[in-house]
Length: 303
Image (cartoon, rainbow, N blue to C red; front, side, top):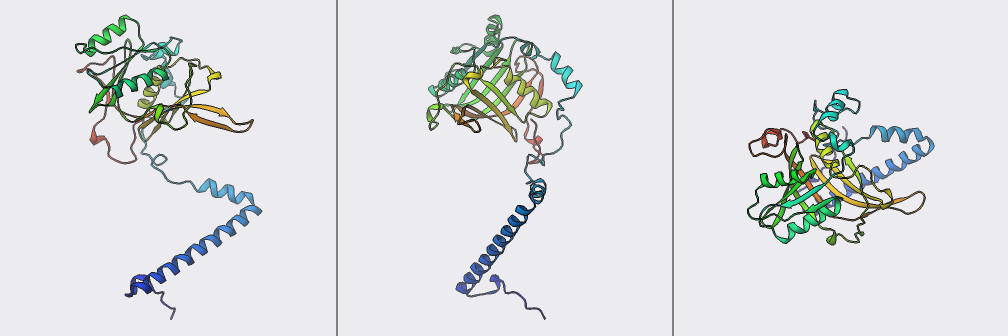
């Protein structure tokens, strides 16, 4: 009869059980190391083996196993192209210069004003207007339209911290509300670079659905279409699992082959809560509205 291996769980003596456990663990690590060394030798002789291993060894993540969404945008979709050519944001992509006004909710604290200052430093042609105690949002929208602003950003505050952003594209919308979190100003980023007045490049990652496509275009409309490459500044909106990470960097050429990144700040995270057709109206039509019951799976994403 073959010898039955003794498991650590079968030994009652604690000291002997621990010794056996460590012995089995060391043997397992030794076999794994020998297997990896042999694999490295085989791949050195035959590079095709390594290519095959890397091609087949794709880790499973929430992103590459996400649930299928019928609204995923294809770059060659003619219907999407027609919608883009006639939507509310089309005027910007035909060459209109963005003009942005940033304001806050009523009675804000210094932290929120500091966040607004960081926002203005990121977006050329943006200006801040302090909100009075009697100024309602519909009045602000009307004044912004009269002064021909293309976008209105309202930063909300709760418990003396900025916690939300309402982005309204003027004059016809759309409007979106984002939850704001993890705000870190540039002054708190170690070895951050100095910001220049050059127009930045815009990088949009993983806005793949029709909803995500609309949100990405709203972000694009906040910046001039022609970046000034001599400034080497880039602002990234990176969507991962419906969290939008906003970062600003300057790329630095180390030599002819290597490029590094210097963070300029600020950095913060956004999460879409609703998208409304037209200019914001409390009783208006919502194109998309987040509800907890929509999260039927960890692999379901909307952007």
